[in-house]
Length: 277
Ligand code: ADP
Image (cartoon, rainbow, N blue to C red; front, side, top):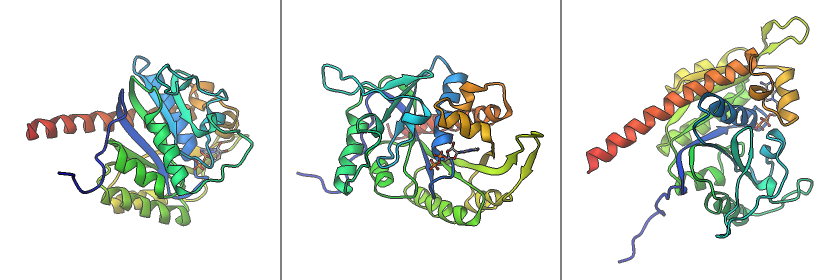
């Protein structure tokens, strides 16, 4: 008998845990968070393998932010070998298309590109795969949720109500689809003055009320800081460029909280499997 229903989620060969990084709006610092989180995880646990998958087909950021511009080599089985920088294995559509040309694709082509980035990459072994997703909640997110086992999602927002409004929608979507929400990152709520280095609040702290309303944790505040832009956009995450700085410390603290979340999820998966057997 042929079965009906949605396709079963298939693990990515060699990958243990998968964390999505998502945001309601573009430009709130989602990719910056994903890149600094991935490098921070590698700094904290150098013996572990960390991967970073950029699923933003139309605006990939990983090639620039991780300073990787080669085309991946292929294994003899025709799998793409991730490019590595700062110890993190990376894959992005940006490695496969001309960086200067716009990608003009329709839905199905995007889906098959995502499928390729998931299944035709020699990822393994990877302990933590951080997946940078496009802004909003669209086909890519649904396709990821339906096709691979996701350990959780980290939401990134800025504190203005326009951003919080769409973050709420995203969070509810993930909760409705039973994807555990690891928490919220509030980016650019304060600014570090380049002259005096003091930290000023500019947009308030609206993310805390949203986190309370949704019953999720506000994990970390990341200040708006010219050093973060400068280093990230030049291809060196601040965690690597200035490891002793307060800015780097913020990402390291975030990464430690994410490790705590991932290990809790692993324990609950093992318990569920035991109950079922
Ligand atoms: P998104 O992925 O949400 O579209 P990006 O991570 O690409 O956003 O960030 C957009 C721009 O904002 C980038 O130039 C990045 O360097 C900058 N940026 C992100 N977070 C910060 C921050 N905390 N301080 C300063 N600049 C930041």
